[in-house]
Image 1: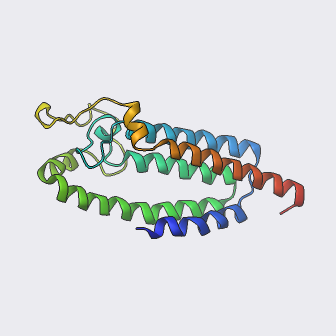
Image 2 (image 1 turned 135 degrees about the vertical axis):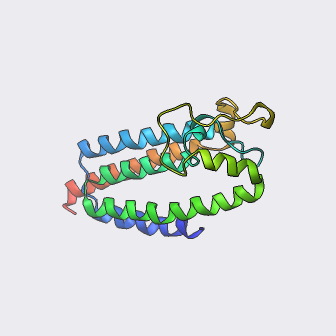
Length: 184
């Protein structure tokens, strides 16, 4: 799965070459990406990597809220590019790599947390969240079900997603400027 990062750079270049951004579409895409950042932030504040199985907050509704947030960010960039071709490149990249990543992580969680993960996985969907009902409720004896923590958000370095998104949106604005200035 290391290839997803390495392949991400050429995908970004192809996206930029195909993009035809406008201020309206960049703003719309930024709003979607911002929603994705919020989902990721909420998830990161509940995730205690390698210490416990995350089942609280957004993890009570989907087993992969970080990737759900990333999906909103990907769709946001697809919209910001204002090009079916550029958007298609982003969406295909995301769909191919992130499904495989989720399945690999599921296997690792099963090994690490065993029956606890099996019980959780039976009640909570892999990706698309349950919106109705109370969500997953962890038992008091497991120690799961923690509240959101800004400290945990920081320990998970989720602020990097915010910085990266701002930087990437700046590059899309630069693409808009180049297109207007030089016609390509």
